[in-house]
Image 1 (cartoon, rainbow, N blue to C red):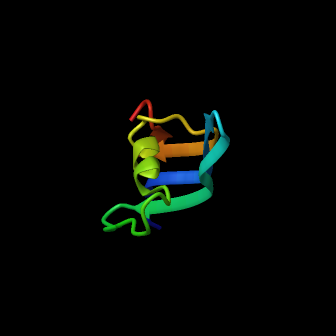
Image 2 (image 1 turned 90 degrees about the horizontal axis):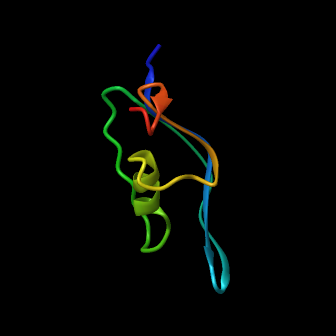
Length: 76
């Protein structure tokens, strides 16, 4: 059985703006196992960089759990 080195469960991130909330990420579930090569592709503004920033602990999710090597991203 492979183990996840990056795991996201029900991950969401909402930014509050003067025009109302912006849902940058909504209910993301992701498991990246050791040795896997992963790329995120999609149009501009779809949340690719935001997801990477959450994984790197540069943004705090509004909801959900992100783990890196089975630890909270802030501890990894």
